[in-house]
Image 1 (cartoon, one colour):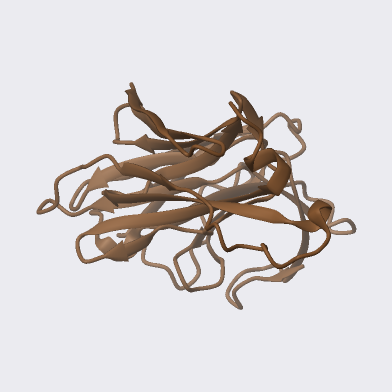
Image 2: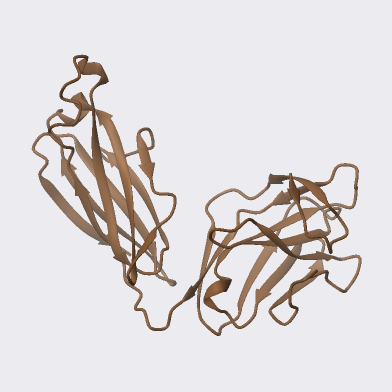
Length: 260
């Protein structure tokens, strides 16, 4: 449940999501306008649309409420010169951030509901990540390095079945922070034992992010087994994939590649 701003004509809604899949990414230079489109398939009875923003370190906030029932949109305390919205029909709408500034970047969501106040459900889309690029910074893909497990890790455990080894993947020196990480063992995706930083962190003028893969010691010591860390990076136009692979036991470097 979430509480909306006091200037809006509704108070509480129970939220669920119709949007599936990854968050959409948009990159714009400072001073540009950014428009986000929203379409749904809930039907024409869901003609009310809300636009939310969540900036880093803050709670999600409702910016504007739109509906096909009236031409004027309810922005509450938000500046109409900064934000604008359209609601051409029940199943679509747009939201625009004008004259982009660094403080405008964050996650933007649209949600829809119908006019039945007894249920109060609002269905959320998957979200759009908006990044305001610094014109002084060059767009740079990450470098990727996989570090082998320590030979001392868990060696004192008497039960061999409980022994585990941790591989560390570090992606660094990239800008902006449009990255995601996944692991493969013997060319098959794995999710069990994976722990990735929730977000990339800024180091001077570029970002870095880490991910860890914990496997049973017997897997790490199985000859020929290979472990790959893949980092996908969106440069504003295309997605680049960087990866590095190491072998079990020998821990030999295999390759470092780039896919566009």
